[in-house]
Length: 371
Image 1 (cartoon, rainbow, N blue to C red):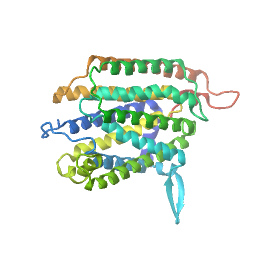
Image 2: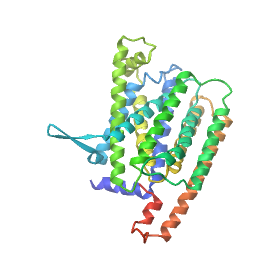
Image 3: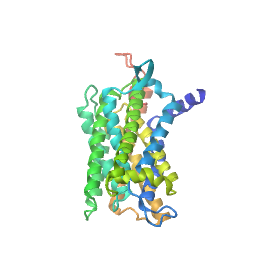
Image 4: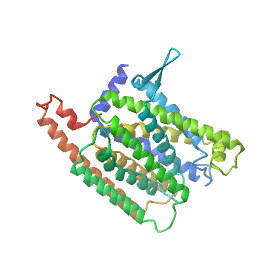
């Protein structure tokens, strides 16, 4: 369709910056609604919120539907690897996109749960998750198979500042507010991200835009299907389990929550999660090193989380972020400034060097790294 090609062309013209804006715009309502619904501060809830597990059935249903709708509207189903089954040509993942999709499904669930734990603010949970992934980025760049990447000095500076943000945010916690479940959730989140970035770096971050779209489509279609089936299957086990168990809470979310009047908030969380997943993945798939693309992604969510926290505090009486958390945010924002510096340098290179005479390869495209 002509309108679709125009939209894609305009977004591509702005490259990774456009994806960061989209990620930010998705993350503010996603994190706010999650905290509001689980803390009971939506109008009419009177402080009685729902656990992160209770809201999952409706949230993942909305997210999965929204993502498949996006793939259809964007026309990206055609990039997936095909499987001929009794005369039907069906999309399927390859082994590494299947494993990446499993990891992505873990990220989807653990992210929503991280914002639902009592005693943990959006900013603190966000700094733990974002700072942890920032710390993983240079490791993945150095060990990825097939496509190891040189890490440029602005990226090293950004990674160091991100480490500092993580240290400051953790040192600010004088009490053991992190429960065992919350700690396990964060650890699983980081483990899933490490493996996903590894698969992306090894097979998808390249000049081939079709390969990028193929990886994206196969990864996300697997992730959303796994999350939906996993949540629903576990919920069915909860029919005979204790109401306080995870399957029991998922069962309540399946048979009780839809009739309690908060469906729009849960659907909003699912759509926000879908948007964050789409734009976040496109940022990661930029062909530059992870030590560059990960901070570009993380800073968008960090700023979004701070704005969401201030909105909740101002309009609903929640706690404002602490001084140490804001220092951590400032360090991450400073990190992105170094990354912006590198982008400006690359644009200058593009103006001077148009084609590599030794290989005939378009040096401008390689330097810009636009997906």
